[in-house]
Amino acid sequence: MRRTLYAGLLAGVLAFNTQAEDVYQDPRTFLEETFSGQVPAPRKLWVTAALKRDIKAIMGHDLGALRIRYWSSGERTAWLLDDIGKEQPITTGLIVDAHHLADVRVLIYRESRGWEVKYPAFTDQFRGAQLNSDLSLDRSIDGVAGATLSVQALTRLARLALLLDRSIEPG
Amino acid sequence: MNEPSAGPPTATRPRWLQRWHRVVGLVAALFLFALASSGLVLMFSDALHLPSRQVDQPWLMNWYGIHAPPSPRGFQHGSHWVTQLGKRLYYDTHEISPVEGVLLGVFDVGDVSPHEWLVITDAELLVLNDAGKVLEHLGRESGLPVGMTSVGRDAHNHIVLASTADRYLYQPDTGEFAPDTEHGAVQWSAGTTPPAAVTDIVVKAYRGEGLSLERVVLDIHSGRLFGRWGPVLIICASLALLFLAVSGVVAAIRRARMD
Image 1 (cartoon, rainbow over the protein chains, first blue to last red):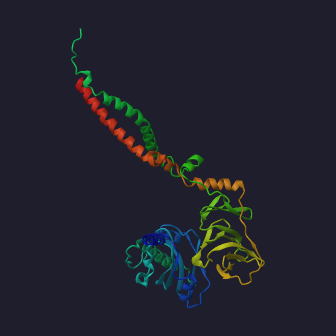
Image 2: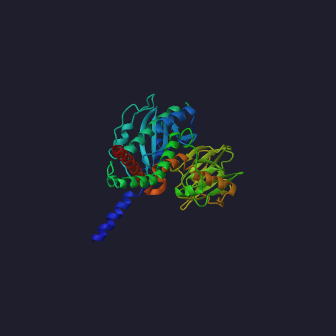
Image 3: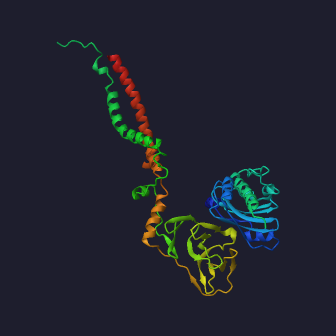
């Protein structure tokens, strides 16, 4: 009985320490929901020198690519972006409507802790947010205890999506 | 004949202190030399360009545990080679980008984007330009199939990605992946070991980039170069120097009193 208990505890500890990939929503499904089933063909935003500088100001590093893929229809744009919370990238879907954040969704979470940022109670704070001229959000985002790095990563991604949306050439 | 000496008797002099001062001094001299010389070099670290100077002596790299992966995996792209070493990707001898997964193949995009080509691993797809710069990273978030095992071209020149479960076609105009319904014959891509002229430079670059000369001098200064007991030795040497200072002052005071 005691051995079984120890084995169970050990298995629990090992399972807790294993960094798994939790897919909360498939990126394709996110895009289909965003555009009501009519997903437009992806477009490409080229990273200019000025944009690269602003990206670095927000992210602390550049994105390692010269262009970024996005989807748009009317004034709505959708972005699939990654940022590392502590050790692993958090794949996030962000929707921008007329330069305001309409939705932020954690799609794939790979960190061992901090997954609470997936809940709407946290992500709803971004709804309606805009980017100030100094590249900050126009509001403060309340943190989540035990998920500080994930909160910071999502806040950076929210700023990045607004910056990228702002950088798209009209038309 | 034997008149009493005017000074203090010899027996009262702290000979043990002199003896230990001498022994500790000799031992500490070695450490003092290493500490002082490395400290001096670190003072001029930037002027000597130590942070940017890379160390590539094999014995030192091995000492630091920096080993190149045993077998570089490469694919030929025209007259160039794309080589993967660990999580690094090289275009001939220049590093392109960090990369996730195992390199599966390298392809030209074709008429859709004649100046672009692809590097595909089992975890991501990189779009590159003629200069070897990364234009885009496509990963799971972009619909890249999970668990790819091989890539190749079919009879229609489509790029086919195969996982254990299914096959997909890469669509270069949209950058999306569609299920391969035809399941026709595919010329699967197979990696090989690049020529020695490439691997020698790449392996050297892989190992060399991991260790700056400043790191080595810093580790000599702190003792960390000598393993986990190194810092303990340096602490002992520091204590020895303190002992030397105190014993030297004590000896000087006693000598002044005797005189």
